[in-house]
Length: 313
Image (cartoon, rainbow, N blue to C red):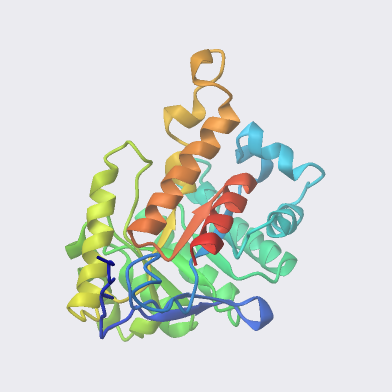
């Protein structure tokens, strides 16, 4: 007896958000089915892959990644090199040097780096903050101002600083707001609600609902993304119909499997292979769970995930 697949149809869809300008601009979101369920409905927009660099330049990179940037000296050089790798759809700049508990770089110094990177590439830009709520509230509105006209995604808006970042990025400078919550559907929805209550257009909001490296409580990530997509599509909840972007790199390269030296853990194999494995495994799982875009760090991870997306599109 033949098996007849019955498509699961939804009347709702995820918002389509455009990042960047010109020929290199990308779109994320737009789906009306679960990830990779092209047998249920056409997928108008494929998931996207970004590559991450930081304001720390080459010194902030793991040694195994630094080798791919041979010859780059300035932040502009690093940005151009990153943009040239196979599979890169957008460039993500992490400004973790602004953390008062770390390098504590000034806002002026970081804005100069932002401008240098922006002038070096024509790819869509995503700018991540330093994860310090107070510093991000000061820094990210300046980022939004400095990049007027580039239609960038300004990440790291949280409930504690949404008024400063949401109002500046989403209203004053017409950028895209990245709403960040901590692996909880209710927290994600609440942040979207209060952001739109500021007057920010919901179609200019992208969610970062959090992630973890595979093996580190990852089941919470899967269940959260799955519930968000289910409510967005099945219940037509417009406060959960924003596309999801996931910064994978910052989670995977910090765990012991990706960072422990070969001298300490010879039985684990080469550091570079372990780092790529952790990054690819986490990114693939995030995409299958509901993420519309992922941010990676190793060029080989970017290439692998890009090919995966194209193969399953």
